Length: 508
Image (cartoon, rainbow, N blue to C red; front, top):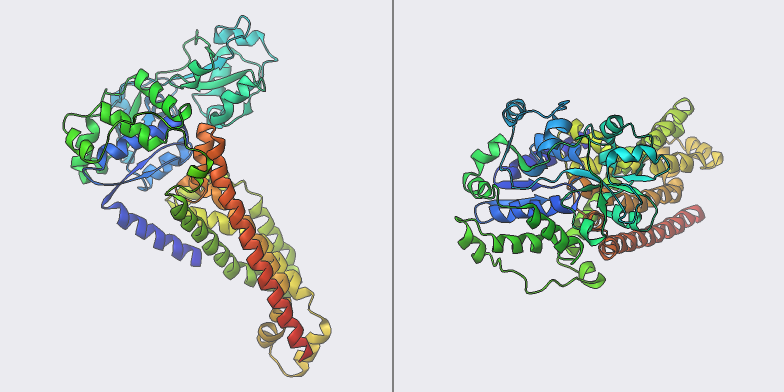
């Protein structure tokens, strides 16, 4: 009931906030981050805007759009056609719009470039020029992005079209290029606007059987967003046809190679390509091109302006999740200790819940709760924190000496009085050890919250993965590790105090 109440509370707050804020979403790769920033900065002179960046793959961002958590995000026509609407073949744009309308969604504002999927190999790969030639090379190691492996318009259809015998391994897109150059894999999937194709001198294999459709960059949006934010939407529509493939490659290069942050990359492009009606607004916002790209070091990324907001978000997630786990898990542990027949059922249920992969659990929670952000992240963290609290509560109560139970009973204490005044205080050190384990685990697990827009240190980690930026990864991992150490130290202090209190009560 408490989780349902929190879901309704946070959900209501999100809905209330969404009324006056245009929420822009983006997926977890460089180009989507940049295009999300372009949309946000284009809209910001005309409305209050929030960019929920790096939300994950298509399924998660689409769920956020349908739930109303975001209003618009950059997408690709081929993805909408084949992955979202599940068409077997490319459909006309008008048909796509008709099928999206009952979902409350629309597609508009073609941005001007086609970013199709392709497969690439190292430039020194002997003989390989076409996709059809891969069938003769069964020993080639394929390292493909997880989304590409699972997409209807990705690996399954590609392997069938070309009769490819290889079995690909899942690899994050952000590190695929380095894995290829280090010869850990031989073939990777790429986007045609990736800047690293030219940087590493890769050979893009010809799609000689015309498998891949066009992936023209467009905006997928909620139909009511254009009505709720007319001025911002008018500014957004002026982006139509203005971003060329060369522009997009240059922006990706500025982020991935020159190390500029996404906001600055978008700002520089907007300053150089001012829409006619919003140039003054952009100038007023200080959109001036940077004189020269400067790559920030680890310390600059570690102590940037987002450190405190992300720390606050991370702490809130951990504290609330562990508190909820205590409220639910301690009574479950008491029940397991009191009723031997239910003990294995309770402990088994808590154990099974903890085995569910984190991202899979988040993907299941989004449609179930109808939202992204804090609520599904809290529910996921609660699920993972339950087992150590339930198990230690049960174990601590079972370790209470039977003689003390009998003595409390002889004094005339009722069962609930024995539990509250005798058994729980004696079991407290063991229970605290379980809470400590849950809290330390939650500090690390909370980094997944960034995949669904709940913030925290995971935002830095997702950006670092997208850019293969080790400094950014460390800027997220180091604070999370320090927070875990501080959490463990705080609980160890509480455990010592609990042990001293227990010893004092026994002397009395």
